[in-house]
Image (cartoon, rainbow, N blue to C red; front, side, top):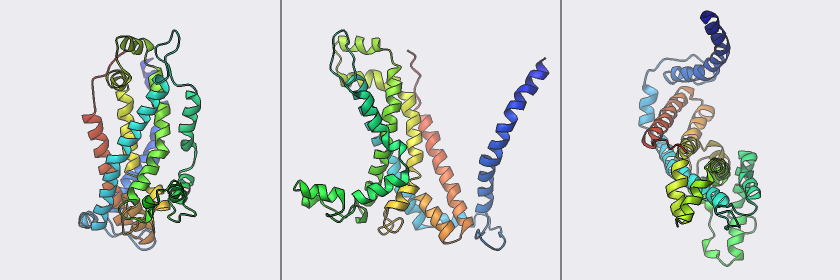
Length: 307
């Protein structure tokens, strides 16, 4: 009987594990293999060069420039996105006026607001990039942002935005925040809905304000969700390929101000036909991403609170 049970379990696990090995594990192994060669990706044989590609990568100013931009986005995008998501979710679920027989209420029309916040999630990232590229258009007659600033008398704040070296990366980071904050508003709202109302009511009846309630009750009870969201947003910040490719000046400009690791990998592989070197970049990206995920899960870990 036990033998038949194990055979039944193996029969169900074997196909998905095989598919995972072929389509997930195998490409990673091949990437490591290619990173040790000078393969062009098009013609000729792949000559084994050992760690030469990684040595070249270590000495590349372009790679370190792209990595620094990803790290800058990693410090900005997850923090702002999750902070805004928590704030809006808390306001939607607990920020309403007190009603009769209800101490804790959400704002009126909270379901509609959640739909509005979530809307960017159902829009293609390509469409989002094109929309914001036109919003940042420096021409006051065509660019919505400069046109709006001119209409309210703030002509001095008009700028080239994506064409300004000091602003371009932050403009793209702001679009990334805008595109993802709605998902976390809905996610955190769902998590808050599972918190018993008795806890909020007891705190508010004891005189606790909304902000102490948030930091002493809501945030600790949502910490596992916040931790997972931080890892997810960090991985997105370490990517940023689509937005940078579409929105930046000449893909990574001006003057390399918006260059990121995935874009550098793409240009190296498909423009310069250096697949071995590009594969080494991919391996480096894997190491950076895994290190970020492990460190985040390790240092952000807290004792689970049961309720």
